Image (tube, rainbow, N blue to C red):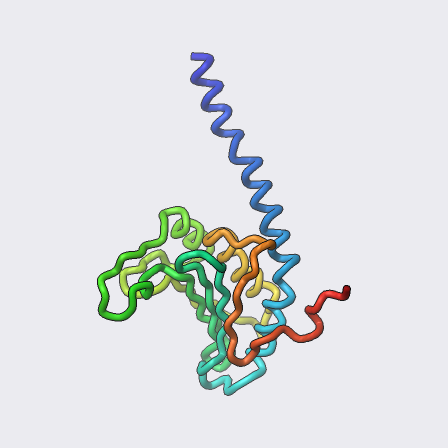
Length: 177
């Protein structure tokens, strides 16, 4: 009986260091990437026609990972941000039989952040209301949290950015050497 109780107690205690480690790695990711993400979101928000969503998106991909991207698109006259996280639905291309599905851990992590977990017709998605003025820090944190918890993004990885209206961060995010 004592061995069983010890095992159960150990199992309950074990997640705490992992949770603390994840909090540390998320903090490091924010330190490394929040400024470039916020900067690009700000650039996109003020660029283009707010009545059109054409090109008004930011997609961030974890390198060397299969289907590990999060993208957000400003729409509804800058009142909303429609965000998607890769589900694997588009991995094989239109009309091809689907061969890739995200793991249960990825789906659960994205679900905790509010993404839909139905990937039967596309990516996981969530439509977020934006304040006036928008809180770009909160949106950047959301995107990076999805990358961190869902796809394992860490500060030491070189995340890839795709933003037609903001291909580069401005000088405000360039570290001083």
